[in-house]
Length: 271
Image (cartoon, rainbow, N blue to C red; front, side, top):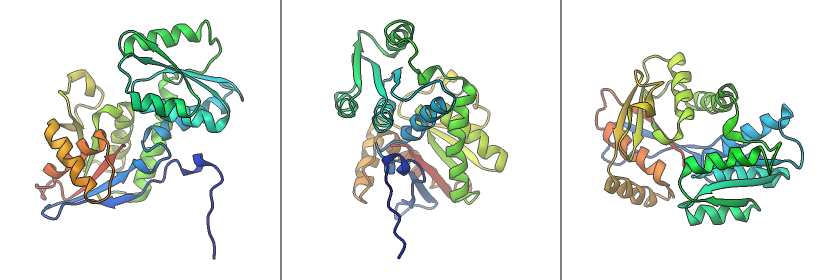
């Protein structure tokens, strides 16, 4: 009997499962790409690993070196995890309202946290200042070229295509994943121009949020009560869903009532 045993947690990044989460009374089908199966339970593991491995390969980062960045979400946890496994130092500049649970998770990986007064803009400014002084020579993931970031994100789009191809007619993505959403939409558009795309958000969507892809997508704003109702509904079938996943699921349920246009929906559960 062949048993595959992994020897490194990073081997478990990606190749996440797809689960049919269609509600009983749903007209269309909803297939969830469960990114919570990544080591830190979010899609950001893929991006953090891709950026750090690219930096090591291109000698923009060396063994025992330092990864420095400003973060205000789960990306910080992913960076800290990858650095811990690879023996790298990790320094994260975070805004003063950075979530305490995320802070605890980051520190559990041995990462150092610096808190700034203000929001993510102030954190970014401090990170760039630190990269030119105290942490000169550190690798700053958020400062990589667009081509590197797009290349890392493209691997995710390719995996989704390999796994489910053009079975789906609609793809629902959380707006907040930014460039990753753009890459997935562009990749799938080139593969199948008939697929429609929906960006789901729990807050008002500004025009510049979707500037690069606004002609290709619909937007769907979900109210907070619907998000938490969806979170509980997913919990009832054993899925521990975060805000991004619950938002996407809520939007997908509404779209699934229109079987003519949304018969088979792929919902990216990013967390």
